[in-house]
Length: 351
Image 1 (tube, helix red, strand yellow):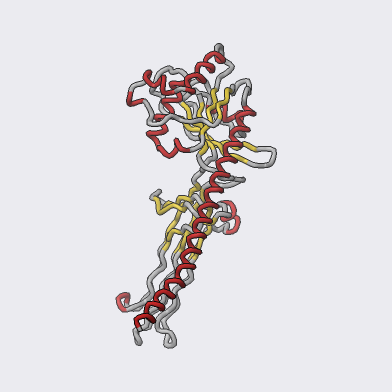
Image 2 (cartoon, one colour):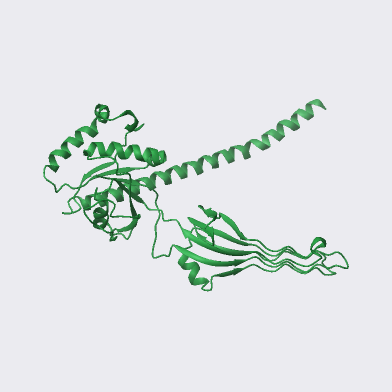
């Protein structure tokens, strides 16, 4: 049994998913001991998120992968306070995790214009440094792109996730007739005729439960998703019923459809701690076989339709929010002059 859930919409082309960079803050400027002048602070190195950026573009544009900020200006008679050195900004794509050489997380960049300071500039020469400047911070950082798939394949071991992934995408995961063949998440790509591409990732949950029916599998998967993160259950979901090439599959599928129409009538079969707070609602239920390719094209069409509908709903919600903000802004701007007039009128009455 495979449960397909839309996670997040994002498009990837050819890309690299990690980079190692050298960064150094600028040195401070010299102080002016005789007049007590202070040198300028060295520039800082920042990592800044941009929507239209990729790690491959960054690597191609800066092949040496060295980023050094400008030095602070020296103090002088005409300018006792030296100016700060020029900051250095490293443009990276949204969805980057920044770590140091020891693997410690410095920060994450999850939206446009997010920025993280990775190397601070040195102080300029001043009294407590004996007017000698300090060098900027040196740091080797790692940029790791968090791969966010459009669709997640969720299922227990041996449900046929890898077989299905190999049929609907370009992925070539390891496939065998034993549990835990897949040791890490696999990412595939579905290409449509209009050149739209969808990333799909497969991962598995616990295998501690013994043999189960299709309906039991759905309930237990729903419970595990609830325990993992309740937010996932609010995503659009499709149900792909795999292994329809097996004997009696059609009869079992009819039983499953009857159970899904009235799931609460069958929840007494489960222990209370195994029953999810809410049952999953599926936009489409598609019987498939990863072996004979039965239902594969229909599944791909349903995935595309579900993603397009979800994207349209998000766009509509965004536009409504923008329109509401504009209306509120116009209301505030229109009401302000009236307040001033009312205040002026009140003062004139008192006079």
